[in-house]
Image (cartoon, rainbow over all chains, first blue to last red; front, side):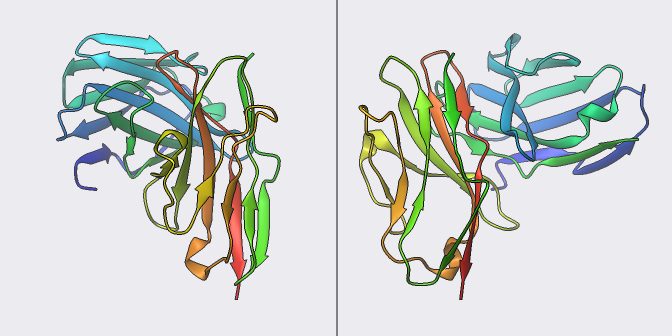
Length: 113
Length: 108
């Protein structure tokens, strides 16, 4: 479990402010993912990365951007937070493509007021 | 469009009774299928994948291509099985598509 950490674990912010969530891994996994978990929607992919500086959009990418400057870190940025982005955010990693086992972080609970 | 459906948001089962969590998918090809589980205060983790055809914690899941289903089954429920269960599919597009999840509660 200690191989994937997320920070912060909890955050309350106001509408319109920028927010950055960090995912850090010590597994040297190539692939990294950001999901959001919402009741009634399950887990939805926001963005993913298949290598340093290589990222692509998921199904709910509007309003989010990501960056990956080194293997171990994957940042998710909400440029201007909205109340609809209140959610629990999970980072995941996998050694290979998405059909390999994904390992999840502990989650970040974000509340946008 | 490719889709994963878990029709039950909540499922309550008595301890010792059989459990079946339903998962249906829409995809014309041959997907890779998974069940992920999130126990209380634990991280989401892989429970099983159809390609390995193994039984984990007494759970099995069989791919039925005719019915496009991948239901998760266990013959005798235990209290520690209470958790959130997600069915997930890989359609070959570098992404896993998750269902909306089923919260399973085992009644003592």
